[in-house]
Amino acid sequence: MLSGNVYRFFDTFTNTGTTQVTTTLNFFGNLGSDGDELVSHLGGGLTVSCTDDGAGHCTGQPVLALVSGNNGLGQATLSPDRYNVSFALSLAPGQSLSLLNFAFLASDVNGPTAADQLLAERTGLALLAAPRLEGLNTQQVASVANFTISPVPEPGTWAMALGGLLALGLMKRREQGSR
Image (cartoon, rainbow, N blue to C red; front, top):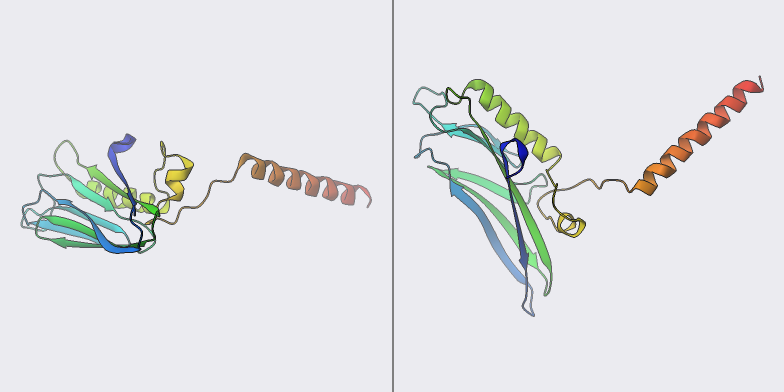
């Protein structure tokens, strides 16, 4: 579990055979809603769901934000009380890849509220935009197949950018001084 009540699931799969393997991997679980789920968001790699009180409001269990990736690889479905994301993959001999999934639980002391639904959706959208990668090494991050991850610039890149900005500033200063 990461801070902020975010759960991260990082799974790596390797084809140890001598021929290409094409398969479907599933990440699934029980929603705890006993078939009475109320879905407020489903699509784009994010599912937000809670237990329906029968009147269209969340009750009992926390609101769940389930995040399965931001590049369309995972196809999420809900059936009564079940969450499933299918990943259609092909792995060459010796190839490895990883799948990264997140779950966030939001619940007020007095039970889930509309604010919890909003918090779950916002947290899920934030995880889609910037998946929580702390604790994963560079190789693990590079192996993630279900997220398009923007690389963090190397310190040398920042130094070059700063140097370029300083040079532009000096040129502008000289230009103004020569007038």
